[in-house]
Amino acid sequence: MTVKVTILTHTMTHMQNNTVNRRLVLAGIGGLVLAGPSFAMTNADASKLVQDVVKEINRVIGSGKSESGMISDFEKLFRAYGDVPTIARYALGRDARAASPAQLNAFSDAFSGYLSRKYGKQFRQFIGGRLEVQSTRAVKSFYEVKTLAYLKGSSPFDVTFLVSDKAGRPLFFNMFIEGVNLLLTERSEIGAILDRRGGSIDKLIADIKTAG
Image (cartoon, rainbow, N blue to C red):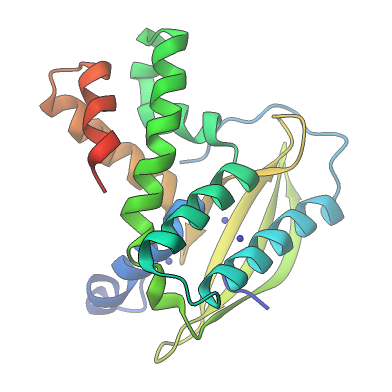
C-alpha cells in the first residue's frame, strides 16, 4: 500500500527537483517513533504487511479513478495499514503531552485526512510505476522492510518501511525515502503550523482539516 514504496539525494539538484515530489507521493502511506517490544511478530509478518500495502497501492494507481477517488482510497489504505495514532502523536511532538485524549483523537483523525489530501494529489505521478519488496530484517523492537521504487523517467530509488506490532498487529509507523525520514519532516511542518497558531492544538486541528 511488484511495488516500490516505509523518496535523499544523488545530487543537491536531484533532491530539489525530483526527490521532493517523490516524498509527496509516498509520505502519506507514511522520525523514528518509539515502539514497544515486539516479540510475536516475525520477518514474514512484517514483509507481508508491506507486500499488502504495495498490492493496494498498485491497485489504486491502476484503478483509473479521479484524483478525489484516489485520495479517498489512499486514506483508507493509510488507516488500514498504518499505525495512525502513533504517527499522529509523533508528528505532534512534545505538544502531545499537553493535549487531552479528545484532542489527540481529533488530531489523529484530522491528520489522516490532511496527509491523504496533501500527498494524494501527487499520487498520479506513480501511475505506470511499481514498488518491489527487497528485504526484511529485525531492528531492535521493530522490523525494517526495504523496497525499491520505479517511476517513469526516473532511476530506481530506495523506500524503507518501519513496521511494529505495538498496536496489537503489524502496522507501519514510518517511512524513509532515499534516507529521508518522512515522519520527521511532517513533525517539523506540523510544528510550524502550531507555532503560527500560538500553540493552540484546537486551532491546529481546524487548520489541517482543510489543508493539504
